[in-house]
Amino acid sequence: MFIIFIILIILYFIWYLRISHVTEEKLIILKNDLNQNNIILTWENSEKFGFPYRVVNKLNSVKIKLYNTEVFIENLDIIYQPWNIKHVILKSSEIINILNQNNKIIIHPDIIASIRINKLNEKILAINLNEISILDNQYTHKINKPEIYFRDNNKNNLLYSIKIKELLYQPFFIENNVITNTDINGSLANYKNININNYYTWLSNEGGIDIDNFKFNINKTFINGNAFIGIDENKDIQSSISLEANNLYELFLIFRNKNFINENTLETSKFIIKAIEIASKASNKIPKFSINIQNGNLSLMGVKLLNVKNLKY
Image (tube, rainbow, N blue to C red):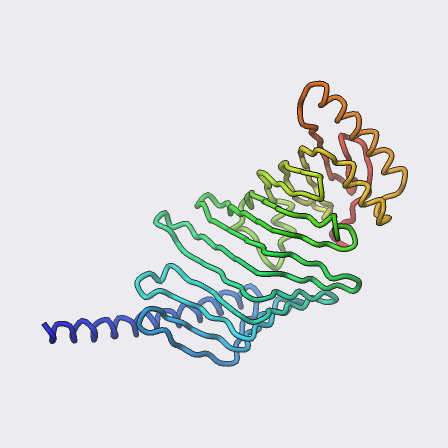
């Protein structure tokens, strides 16, 4: 019996070494695949540990570069379970810095991501973060407790779900007007055709961002609805949004108080919103609104309110 036990340990050790080698190969394949898409992944050195329950590849001084964007991670643990290498966990307890021209994004620890392939061969990615800070030339924006989920449904669509506890976006959504309890679900059409080097082509010709449902709160205003976002060949945003809101005018007041819209736009929006609210109250229904962005114009219930910036600039 003792001899059998020793043989089993030796066999497991050999098998573990094989799995450990496979994980190294997967990392090199990933690096080469990213490089073919002009995404440069490098690390200063690596460590390996975790025997007997895990295979951990610890990468130190990790850098990821795509054009003008650079990501810096002090250390990153890539964790495999020897009995299921189709489930990978990424973990880091260090602050992650992302630099993009005049913007800086800081992801505060802890970050943990899970990548797995289920029995239907669907790829599932889950990301949980503590806080994201975005610094531009004027403001610091914060995203608290974001959760992001992706699932490949084998129909060339990528399903996604985003949950955010609090979103602070200066100068509009601060103090009592912080966006809370955000929940967004939808899909990316034909996502396998996305070229990271030219995603505008995918957005304008082949795909788009479907938002099946979204909801969030701003103070005492509750908004939920659905939307589609794409662009045309001139890189103008093309979007349609259908939403329900109990106090939509308060949102326009926030924009007016920060001089994002003028007084005429505020008054026009007030007239439209109040008319819809009166009609909805008479029929005992929640007010419903439609917002469209087309050819550089944003319209509320078919009435033009704003000009929307072209993505070329």
